[in-house]
Structure formats: structure tokens, C-alpha cells
Length: 153
Image 1 (cartoon, one colour):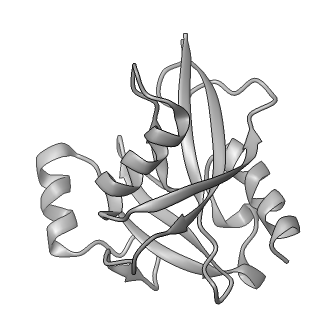
Image 2 (spheres, rainbow, N blue to C red):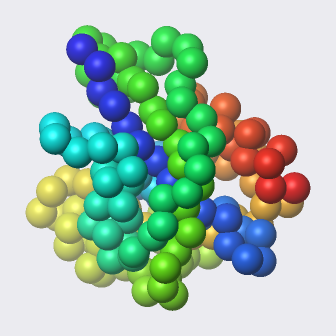
Image 3 (spheres, rainbow, N blue to C red):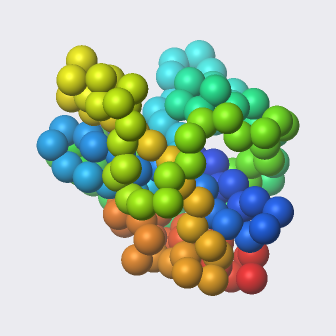
């Protein structure tokens, strides 16, 4: 079974990279914003939907940056193979979601989501000069982090 994931690379005008700090299934992960492709939608449509759902942010999905080119088993289901697709995104409006300065700095609203669902997320920007594979948790994201460093230096 394949699990198709679509993620956005947002690098701000002042050279900061947007990441999502998430508590999922009992573990902490820092990753790129995005999520799972739903039946009936295209990858760009999926990514625009994910940014709207997660950040209430309209984005323009720009060029394709990377698609997984190696086997990666899902961290959550050993019967699933992950295929991740990454695009550069450009915000079409000012980011309204709170941006944190510390990893996993969840506010009361986010903690309420956690109490209801067992999962939550928050967002922060990392300066490009400090950003790298050490900044993200998931194996495919680590590959893309190094690509981001080379493309946006």
C-alpha cells in the first residue's frame, strides 16, 4: 500500500524556512507543512488544502522540488510505503498562524486540540543559515532539507 504525502517548502523573503512542530501518536516530530493526498484530489490541490486547514493560509503552489526516489516505510504503519512530493509554496497573504521561536511551544488552543485528538501542531521559522537535515525529523524531509539549503543559499 502506498501513502502519498505532499509538503510545501516556504522560504520567507528574509530567508527563513517554515517548519511544523507536531505531536503525533506519542512522539514529537519537526517536519515540513503538508499532509496526505485524499482520493480525488491532485497533489497541488492537496497542498493548498493542507495549508488552509493547518495554518488558515492561502498559498500559491509553485515548482516541484522533489519526489521520494528511495524506499521509505511508514513510521506509523509497516504495511505502507511513503511517497512524498515537495513543492515550493508562496504565501498569498500575511501568515496569521502564530509562529513560535521554540520547538513544540504549543499554546492553550493547540493543547485543547491535543486533549481532544491526541495530536497537535505549531509552526516556526528557522533561519536558512541555521537550517539543515538536523532541523527535521523524518528521513525524506532530511534529504529535502539539504536540497533546500543548496537551492536557497
